[in-house]
Image (cartoon, rainbow, N blue to C red; front, top):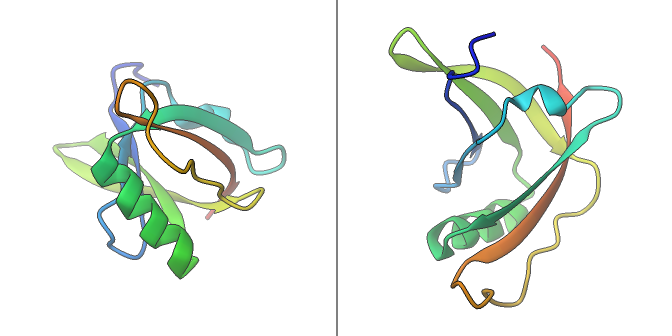
Length: 103
């Protein structure tokens, strides 16, 4: 796999949540799952809150041939807990414990 391939996670409810991944998504497996620890902007945070409240899912995508290609659906291993407010940098620390649903 080309390590320069762009990857992201988006929500399935079209609430505007999009998280560009800095590392390949291979760390999230079907059987053992995986964790992504990151900081998100206020816009991403608000979208993720709506996704959580709607109990909507997420999907992994990879940039190929000039377009985003749908990948595997993702489910939460544990309930999504979001921080009350931003850190001193103005970002919201988020930990996503996810499983892949391989199609």
